[in-house]
Length: 269
Image 1: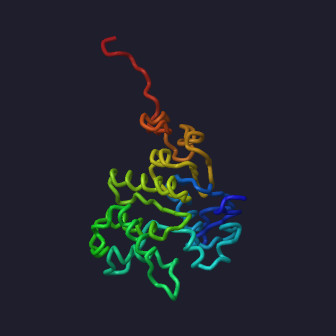
Image 2: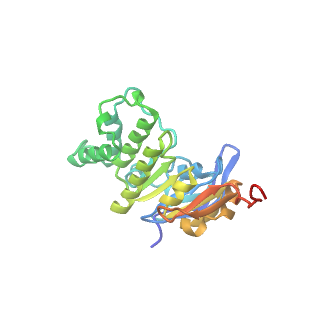
Image 3: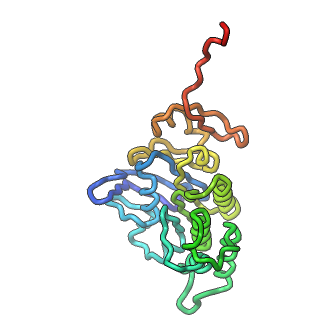
C-alpha cells in the first residue's frame, strides 16, 4: 500500500503565473517532512494544494488514492489539518473559542460537543502553553502568542496528517524550538504524518525525517537530511557558498554560510 498523501503531475498557478509545473511527490506516512527552498520557489503553494486550499491547474493531489477534489470537505478536515501562513481570526473571538473550532469536523448534528472535544481542546492548549490565555481575545495577543494559539487549533483538530506553513513565524528562538519539539513529539508518540514549510535550513535538517528541497517550482532533491544536505545542494538551491558539518549536538547536517576560510601568512612572517 502506498503513502496516503501524494501528488501526480501537479501544476499550480495563480492566474497566468505558473508556480509549480508537472510535479510528482509522495509524503512518507508517519514521518516529519520539511519543505525548504528560497522565497517564491513554490513550497507554500505546494502545501496549499496538499491541503486543498488551492485547486490544481492540472494533475491531482490524492488522499488514500482518491483525488481531493472528489472528497467532501468534512472528510478532508477529519484527516488533514492545515495551518496556513497568515490565518485570520474572527474579530473578538477568545483563544478557547478559536481552539474549539478545531473540533468542528468531528462533531455531529445530534452531538455538538463531547467529552472527547473538551479533552482535545484542553490538551492542545496545554501542549502549546496557551492554557493561561484561554479567556483572552485573540486580537489582543502578541504575534508569538497568536501563532501558538493557531497551532493549538490545528492540534485540537486531531488529524492523522498535519500541514504547517512556516509554523515558527513570529516566534523567538526559544519558542521556535518548543514548537518544533512539539511537532516531533506528536509524530513520535502518535504517529502523525507532518509536513512543514520552514525557512531555516538547519532547523529543517534537525527535525525532518524527510527533506524536500525546491527551487523554481521543482524538486531539486529529497530524502533524509543526512543524505542530501551538502554544500553543493545549498549552492544550487540557495545560491550560497557554505560548509556543511555535523551538528555537535545531534550529528545532523549543519550549514555554515560562507566559503572555507583560506589559510594566509601568519603575522610577522
